[in-house]
Length: 410
Image 1 (cartoon, rainbow, N blue to C red):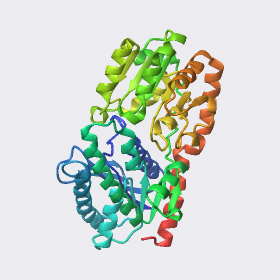
Image 2 (image 1 turned 90 degrees about the horizontal axis):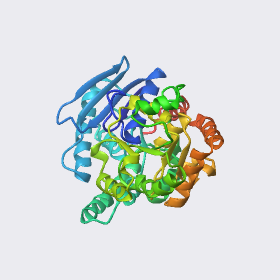
Image 3 (image 1 turned 90 degrees about the vertical axis):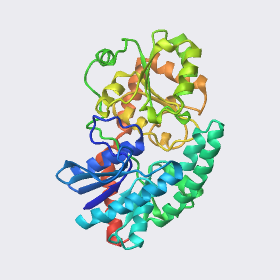
Image 4 (image 1 turned 60 degrees about the vertical axis):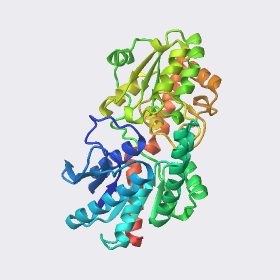
């Protein structure tokens, strides 16, 4: 099949940091489709492109076109980006006729639909993947500032634009069963047009590394004691503040423990100052090592160096990619028992109630002090990750693509 993937800030290689699932998952999906023999073209609005089209050839049948991601901020940026995408689609479809368009945000899907309705491109099916839903994402990250008032107004407009976009495309991929319900209830999407297909993890890349963990720790500049890992954007909803609040109790029971934070890049670190201030107040700054903009190629080593990975999200998630990556590496995961997380992480000994700092601390301590429990959770993770293996997810999407193409859904 000839597939056009539309996604923001597509990485050039694994030498770049891949900050969020909405960047990382389309990257691995594109690679997976290419490995399955498909001709894949990626159209990617990117922050660093100001005008024109930059072409990157990643393989014989894998080409990336980077374009401007629009002007200004918020909804205005989204709308100007739609204009840039339509312009680029007109040029690209003159060179290649695609079988299907797969957009990874509602606005990118809307751009394809607008170009199709205006007969600027051939009429082909459009699938949108909802990696998250913008309105709950926004509410999960507010902290009550004046600036948040403007963010809320912008988010309200964005929500209605997303609803229009999701109603206009031919099918919607939901990345968790939890999100399926949310799309139906909050965005009023017809449930018969939603297909639950989880994001996949490349288990040839994210896997247990057969090297002594102390060596991996030293490689990252850590000591040989137990290491608690947090990976995620430094925003409120990712819940690092909860882990910091749990630190005194964890250290009381495990005195030689240290903490590793992999926080993405500064563009995604809106909450960093508050987190560092909280940590300073706690008196445990010396127990933390912070890494920013870690290349994707390094991330399997990071997960394998950790004794436990903590995902303490609050307010809203779908199914965080971090959970799947840590599971694939055979690292015990302690995570919030909400949203789509229990669809992958099924052992109650690895889950805690949202926002419960006491329970979070004890779950972490249990893993660090009980090697048998840590081993059991790690082995369970390597079993439970199997339905999320990238090859399996690519196969499911291939079947959906073929159904859409054969039914002429456009």
